[in-house]
Image (tube, rainbow over all chains, first blue to last red):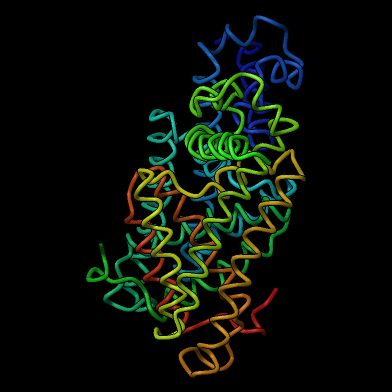
Length: 203
Length: 203
C-alpha cells in the first residue's frame, strides 16, 4: 500500500476509535469519520468494504494497543508476577485518563452490538478471552512462585479480573472517574491472594 | 388515563424493553416499537414526547422490576442477610435466563449512551447507585450480626458487587450464558467475608 494510503487508512481508524468510544457504533456515521479524519469523500470505501468491516478493524487497532500494554507490563521479569498483571490494568487506566474516562471500547461495542450481531459478539468475546489468556500465563507464574494459593484456578481468576474490569470501566464511564477502576483492582487483587477461585468452584 | 390508554402505553414500554435490550437505543426505531406492540401509528407520540423520553420511561419500567426483586429478596428476614443480598442477584439471573441472557439494560444503555448523553449517564448512574444503596442497608445488618468483618465498608462493598455484576452481565450477554454471573457471585461473596473493602482502602 502506498504511504499516503496507509496514512489515510490510519487516520480513519484513529478517528473511528475516538468516535466509536464516545458515540457508539450506531451513533457514528461514515461522514463524521471522514470529517474527523480530514479525509476526502470516497476514501472510506477505498479502504473498507462497509461500516461493519471498518468497526472490526478499529477493534483490531484498539487491540494493537492492548497487545502493547500486555507486552510492556507482563514481560517485566524484574517485577513480581502479580505486580505485572496489575501493571497491565494500571497502563489501561492511564489510557482511559487520557480519553477522559470513556471506558473500554470492547465493553462499549460488546454491549451495544452483541444483542443482534454474532460477528461482533464473537470478535469481542475473542478479544476478552485473549486478554484473560495472557494474564493467566503470568498468574501461573505467580502460583508457581507461591504468590497465589496452589489451588488457584488461574484461568478462572484471569476471567474474573477481566470481567470485573469491564464492570468497573462502565461505572468509570458513567462517572468520568478512575475511582471505580482502582476500587475494583484493590478488591480483586486482595481477594486473589486470599480466596481465589478454585477448580472446584467452576460451574 | 383511560384504561385503553394505559394498556397501550404499557404495551409500548414492554416492547421497548425487549427491543432496547436486544438492539440498543440507536438500533431501535419508533416504528419497530409500534410494530412489536401492535400499536397504531400516532400512539407513540400520544404517550411520549420523543424517543429519549420513551427510553427513560423504559428504564423506569425496568427499575420497577428491580424494585420488586429487591423487595422480594431483601425483606425476607428468615434468611441470613448475606443470603438475601445474593438472593437479589439470583432473581436477576432468572430474569436474564428468561430473556436468553441479553445482560442488563442499565449496562447496555449506559455503555451505548453515556459517552454523549449526560441525561442517560445521570439516570443510569442514579439507578446503579440506588441498587447499591439498597444492598448496603442489608450488608449493614450482616456486619452488625457478625457475618461480615466489623471493618467492612458496606457502601464500597455494595458498589463493588453492583459493578462486578455489570461486568459479568456483559460477558453473559456475549456468551449467552449464566456462567460468568455465577462465577462473579461466588468470587465476590467469598471475598466479601474474607477480605472486604474497608474505609481505609477508599480512594
